[in-house]
Image (tube, rainbow, N blue to C red; front, side, top):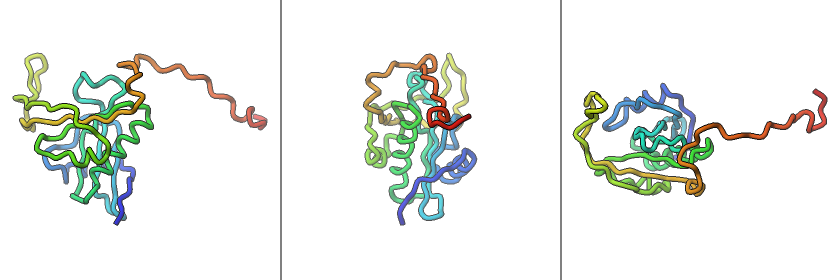
Length: 179
């Protein structure tokens, strides 16, 4: 049976993640979610949010924060590809995600993502300058994956104000329709 991308809302995505993700609960941050179905059955979801690392939170980058499937072949690749297509359509120029170092990354490579760096495991989330609970933290090396548009090289590091947009023409007047 072929896979198809389907819309899901936040509650549907978080419920699926709670049921199926191997090692994480639903994320705290959220911009949008995407589902993948086989026939009428939802077989996977992905959530996308702001980058967790402040260094990457430049206004032009999103992070795929969770991908969870029921094990259906190719569902992960379909979700990573759909997340990137949606991000580009919204004007983002880069997307990032992380995997555990022991995961192959085959789904990411199949969707056009590239391994960019390896991050060594930290002792936890708690830092002297930013106190946090280490509940749920798994100390494991992580791989950073990136996909970006060809326009990313010429983009500023941060968009600081809304771009100026020409006012939309009056479509009724332009079409010769009286208002």
